[in-house]
Length: 170
Image (cartoon, rainbow, N blue to C red):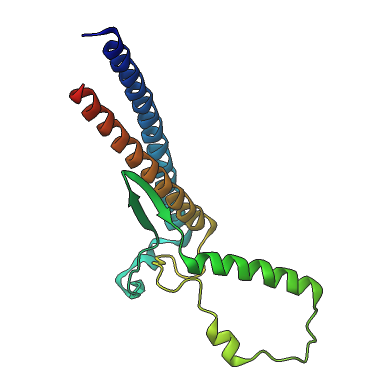
């Protein structure tokens, strides 16, 4: 073996060790997030009471994906839905518009306008109903951030695998 090949293998091993350290850190973060989310769900169940979680309160909405993931050359990314970006922009515009304009109490809203706006809860699984407690909302936010952690974890794992293959080839 030449000195350059030994140096290259050392660099690859070092990169693999750094990626492994990142993987372990992300894995611990994911475990903490999932434990905290489970605690929040238990808190929400306790707050609402067991009687609300019977067969009669079954949510019959069709489940739709809440997150889409794009895979590009071993890198996993979360795809932002165009509807999410539009609703954020609309929310900012309406906040600015409300500051500038004040409605008269006698004005009525157009029925078509209210029907055109979709409910933000359409297609989402709501086991606690539309009026969720703060604990349930916190659990939902934690799970959303856990999905990002999972995406980072999988990308790191894919990088580790590619470094292992690269080491085997050398």
